[in-house]
Image (cartoon, rainbow, N blue to C red; front, side):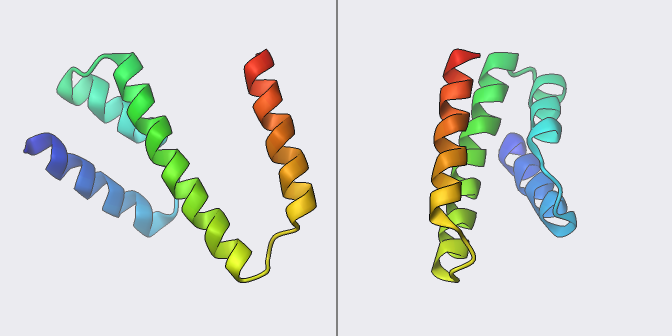
Length: 84
């Protein structure tokens, strides 16, 4: 229960200032709660997937996205990640 409340408070604080919270989340999970680093990284990355997808859908609905350029950058980034 304490872990859930900590994440809720951390998410609210980060949301108010608009900062990325992966670093803080990983630190809190590993140092504060003793979660293994690989698990903390997976939690941070999986939460970013949903946030990024939600933002992309919102911008797409408002016609603020150049789909061709976004697709090129996204596909290039995926290949770069796999190659790295």
